[in-house]
Image (cartoon, rainbow, N blue to C red):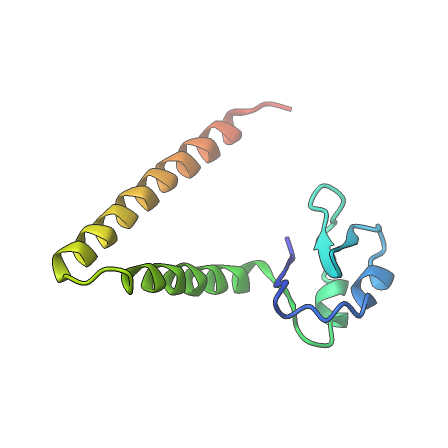
Length: 114
């Protein structure tokens, strides 16, 4: 599913006009893709002049970098190495918990019969 990097969006509305299923709205001057309507055709990605709309595989790298930037910013608030290591371990624990939740949810979704 395409995703909009709001920091890059220049509010040109080209994606809104190009979307064949009206799955893109503008919210506070930025494009917003409505997942429930999106058919994943990729027209918005191609039309975006500033490449603010990312493909699935591009989102992963972007989110990883964003997470690292946030954690590094948090680390600057700590003085000792011990405190910094404790914060990193805490972040790893939280991410492992999220990973278990996602895996469990995916397994249950596979079992749903429609």
